[in-house]
Length: 582
Image (cartoon, rainbow, N blue to C red; front, side):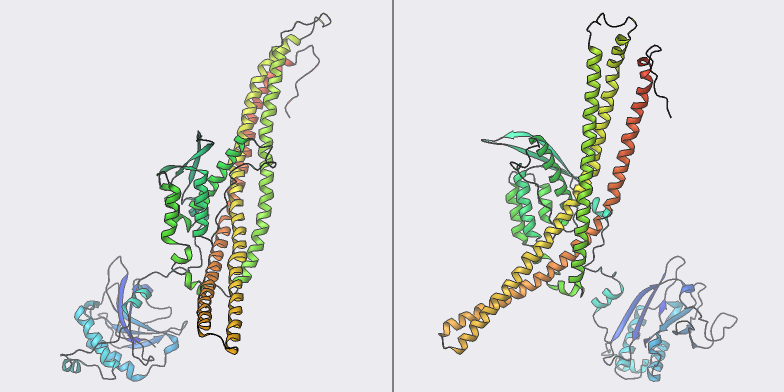
């Protein structure tokens, strides 16, 4: 049970009450003192449900008697003491006793009550001198003595000191907010998307001594700067990023050149544009990653405007090393991992594999729809051109044509209709670009992330785990050699050398085990990142629906404007009539 001097409070009309109370724990044999500091709301919220003031209240508002009343709902007890000058907002000085410690020994209760009696708390405030006096009396009680001012005066030359423990621990307990679980990522998709947006534009090709190359203008909204990069710069950056964060999802780069015999149907211009889009997705995934985005390596690549960015990136990595060397909890990762981490990993990996397959099919269908919109634009344009060709034919009609023929009038009308079909073609082309930019690109972005997660899983299994198993096998071979060396007499130098190698191998295995746990730790976080990105599905569907609505509305307006112009094609004598609206 926690027993201490009364909790002295200050009051204010609009602010909560600051409560400071030294609390004794008599069940602790060491007699440690614990200072509790907390902010209480006004008096109406201090007393638990079912509390009523113990004692009889006089006409002037004071309490004549003191006592304890147990809360009927929680079993907690409250001790009430009267305040000498009643405050209309805060009229009780209270402390609470937990239900689990109701067996209070009487001597402790008497001592705590005596300490409370000897401390001056005028107007509900505890002065600095009174606080020191209370602490000294508590120290006497901890020593098994009866606390009294008389005894305190005898010790005036050397005041007893209570055991307060470490203030740092007290501060962390009461004044600091609770620390977040290091394993759990609390980011939302919206927060990730607003971290940064990287734009990438093609710069006109420049010719070198032998070959021409393409440059990209990379602009970061976060750093408000534009830099120029070549593909080789991205290649080095990706290589160093993979070394720095081997246990994270590092997106892959697009190929540098077209694959001969595979992309024969793709023009060089289309390939360069596709590579630009892929590099832009790569940079946005990196710049929005919770860990990558705060690393000096990424900042250097996005902001360094010098000529040799590749050396700058490599130097930045040499200064830090990989993430295992710089992460503060790398060697403690095992403590944060759940017991069923392997089962969670297997389940999540299978689920993400199925999601990846489904999104891959969605992307393929979206690409076909965007391609059909572009083909529709081409067909409409060619259709209009053929109408224009018919209308522009000025060849005279043969004598076989009837004098009643309206072909001449029709030719003029067809020529004018070609303009509307050109507008329709432009609207269809815009529809295709919207589908490609807003739908296909977002699907590709998420697919790049999903693929990088699958690559990470393979690196974990074929890299970290395989190296660990190989190190264990090597260690077992060394141990067998050591056993045979002890049985068969060998030179002392060779035995000592073998012992040294065994010690080195043990250290290497220990490091690999720590890296293995840290790899699982990072893998668990990256799995959370994948699920954080899953709401992008709603963004993709929203973009797809909006694109279709806008495209059909714009094309519908052009078709509606075109319909009245068909009247000249249906003369009274040609036997045809325009189809009425339904």
